[in-house]
Length: 300
Length: 175
Image (cartoon, rainbow over all chains, first blue to last red; front, side, top):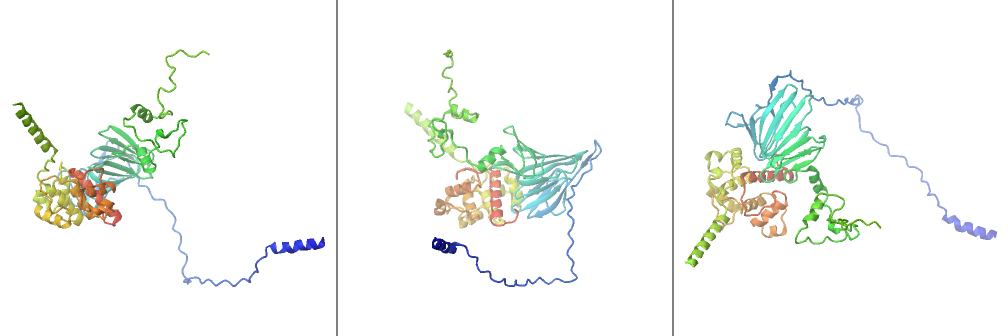
């Protein structure tokens, strides 16, 4: 018995984990600190100051002040002209532009403007815009910008007074309540408006003239002539179109592995109407469940 | 005679079809105005109101896009330079007042910017049809065919999109 116990212990002992031999700790290599001048004191941390939001004082009621646009950056070749002149002038830094001025840029050129008291514009390459109105009416800063072609980035700041900022294009008008957005208009694709992600909800109201349709762009939404609805455009950009209802099995369960049937030669307009108008009976015949319509009810 | 009347009707219908299917000319080119030869911005603005861009205007615009300048004084000089660059085939008949097609512009743009071409585009790099399809694929323009004419505003937007592409991919100025 004792021999059996000893044999068990002898077999068990090698199974115990043996601690590795602890090597004596080697002395850590000395860390050489960079040489520091004894007289150098640590740089004081500058206090973080929140950027001051410019505040514009309202004018007395009924009083109007005509404002101007200032050229703050020029890259490449850009020109501008006054409203009552046919002569174009090469844009230079610190040029002052009166309301009604027209600006155009060439290829590989951009022009930045400070418009009025609350807006900044960056006019991109091959663009032509006009600034018909830059005025302060009492407590309202009223600005109109017309984008005839090209691309222009806008930044409208909140400066304590009401801002009435509108952008006009050949196919749509924009009313801005947000901070930043980009407007592009061209002959191939029409209008494209993109907001910045710091915009608030319904920051930009876009009114498409031909379709007589108004859409609201929130945050970084995008609306274009092809896809005016920003939500629909976001859906197409992020996911593919939803699966066809024809993939449903007879019991109504969706089977993604089943290939979609070929499109019918003659479209089923009735079914398409159901799909377009939504509802839980997508793809199901409207008359389903109505077989007994017109018959006397069963009393049994 | 009845057969003569039928033949006359058939001839009239054939003439109408031939005339109706042809692309009408673009009219006097914008660049024909001497003061616009050295005025790039004035040229672009004048092009806005062209219902159809002429071949002369299209070549001038393409040289501005490719080189940043267009020092050619006449359509003949532009056409010779365009043939040397491979924008226009040697045997193609191009008239100054003819309407510029999407294919003509697409061939030039495909040589101006180093686009990634498809298999057929690489086999036929100067074919208007495949150049047009490659531009559509890369998002430069919506669905178009090579034989369609261009409006002035359409050419302007196309040129602008090429500039945007170059600014992003080649680090060009004006981005």
